Image (cartoon, rainbow, N blue to C red):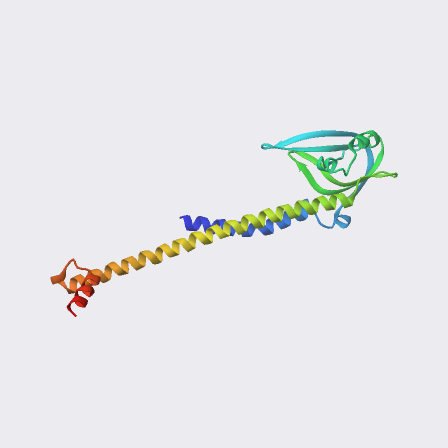
Length: 207
């Protein structure tokens, strides 16, 4: 049963690789200039919101547009200095802005799309280059984690099977030794109980 679980886990991890790749194409596309959509409209409100996924919080800023569309960007952009959020709050609400975005919802019931570039006719608030850099970091972190888990788990399974194989060989050797001992005892009933090694010593003594 344990063998089947180990084999199934390796197969699952191998299948997880293509799934991660396909998911990353949607969540963190590498060619943003060609994959991002463009929207132009009037922003009526900017709001900060924190949502929780289990024990983890996901702070984000939401842009509500005049036609009801919503966009979001992570507070990580603010912490890295990509956006001056105080200036953003002062300038963006009430103005017409251009938003480049990808078709990825914030989740948890929200239909907001992720903004990867925000600008107006005078300045860029969130640049496409900064979003591409963050996406690259996210992809790298995900693949390093995946490969590390795959290598460590595969190594652990390999060590388990190597140890099990060694144990099988040792057991087979012991059984073979016992079989030879029984065979010798059956062939020499007068010396029953004396192992072959004792007989060899006895014969050497006679010589």
